[in-house]
Structure formats: C-alpha cells, structure tokens
Image (cartoon, rainbow, N blue to C red):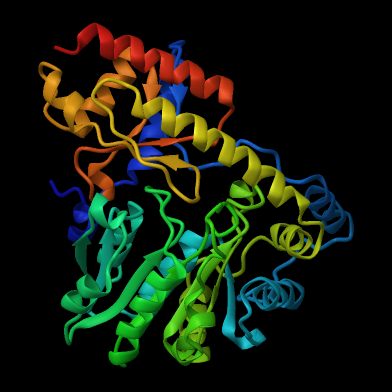
Length: 398
C-alpha cells in the first residue's frame, strides 16, 4: 500500500520554529504552564492607523481580486519607501507583492533555480532557506560561520563557496537567528566579491531592517553597489516592523525579467495577496512611522536584559546582537553537564519538559549546540522564563 507522498516532500523537514510553537500551544491547551519563546512574532498590536485603513478598505468594497503582483497603490508605497529609506530606485514592473516575505523568497527560488543549481547559504540561517531551495530543485551550499566572525559570512568564505554551478547567494541582515547585522565595511567586502561573478544572483532578506540598533546605518547592497542592481533581489515586508505577521504581505524588488518570472509563479499558485492586507500595508508605509521607533526601543530594552541574563546562566554563553528579536546562546557546556542530554535538540525538549520554557534548538538553523529564544514578549515574561531555566539548571547540572 503506497502512501502516495512524493519522494521530494519526504526529504523536506517541517519548519522547526512552527513545530515548537505548535507543541507549546498544545501543551498550554492541555493545561500545562508553558512560556513560549519560540515564535518569531512581535507581541505588539498592529498600529491603529493601519487597522483603520483595513476597515475602510472593507467598507469601500475593496474585496475583489487585485493584480497578481499587487495594487498600484501598494507598489507606489513600496517604491517610495525604498527611495526614502534605502536610497534605491525601482519601477512598478520591478516590484512583486506576495503573501509574506517567505512567499517572496519561495517565488524567487522557484523562478530562478534549475535542477542542480547551487544556493550559498551562510550558517546559522533561517530554517526555511535550505528546504525551500530543495523544493525548487536547487542544492544548498552551507557555509559555516563562527563566533569569531560574529556569525557573518566573510569575503574569503564567499569566494571559496562560489562555483560554476552557483546561482544565488542569500544574505540576511539583521539575522534570524543570531541578531547580527553586516556593517557597511563587511557588506562592501561581500559586494566586491559578487561583482567578479556575473553568473551569480544575490538576495538580501531585509525583513528585520527596522528592528536594528547598530552604531551605523544598516548597509544596503544595492545602494552600495548600484551595478549589482541587475543581479540583486531585495526581500522585505510589513510582518516584523509593523507587527503585521498575520496580514501576510511581503515583497520583492529586483530586475524586471526576474520579477516577471516570479509573477508567473505566483499567478499559478496563490494569485494576488489579500486585497484588505494590501490596503493596510499602504497605510503602514505611507502613514506615521513613530510606531517603528517605539517597538524598536522596546526590543532593544528586552535584548539588553535577556542577553545579560542568559550569559549568567550556568552552562550558557550569550553574545549581543544588533537587531531582530532573538537571543542565540551557546549551550554546549550545559549539554555536556546534563546527564542523558546529548545535543541541543534534546536540551530544548528538556527545557520544555522540566522548566516549561519553549525554545528552538540550534541544529535546524545549522548551528548545533545553540538554542534560539525570542524576546518578542514582555520583560516580565522574559524574567519568569530566565528564573525557570536558572532553577532547573542549578538543580540538575553536575
């Protein structure tokens, strides 16, 4: 009796972050006291003016299909945003609006990869990059970074990773899961390498762009190297910055021929993103931006507390980031001292069962020995989670 499932799908792993969130939610429903630090989702409400724009769109009857690649109003808002904040110029036919930034990346990989094409992915990486590459027929080339390089790809590593089969390089800054961001100098070094390889595309996953507190402006590859614009695809969206995860609006900005191919993929899968969500996204980009500063300030305060607190836990070592809302501590020492715990996956399960704290193991991010904790929640909840972990660690460590 066959199970009818395609061989390719059997090679794909479920999203580890979603799996942890679902497990934590199931335990809560069963009556267990669980603090969930797994989900990458802001705990803030969507800004009021954005919600009002959505309500008005409903009342005005904006409930029909839109153009597959997004409404002209939203495209114009995105173009204005890119010019205003990133100093890069795009036209309407160089923008594709999708059902979230994740959908944008999936469209890109589906549109450009041939069987066997290689995608260079620095590790630690967002858990979905390798599996989406696999689904698109590509081969992931994982380049391991280290704490000594601040978990960032170096120019030397990029040069060594590129082959004749390389089709795409993925850069994520600020990073999920590390929170590290490339400096202007580091991005320039990578850009100089990419200039040498005309057959290589690069995508910059900028979804955490506005959750950044580095000492210098966040580096934009196209602004630094306009000559790379014909080979660079910018990915972004409203989910993280504007606390609009459920609205599902992301976008890609890139060369017309690639955007056209991505639109073709989208036209045969989801068609247009939600019309109401698009109207809300217009308000997000064109409306007051003070909400960004308020949320960023809160995330920075949580970051400063949690990094310091985790670094004091037995068997933990945690370095600060420059953005996003994740802590990514090294827990190898704790694992070594816990009887019956052999890796970060077992350690994450142990924390959930013994401390009632849900975290994501580092292995799915390409970083064994680490765990990811989201601080997209209140300081009080973070304090409670740290206290639970400290109590368990002190009780069980040899």
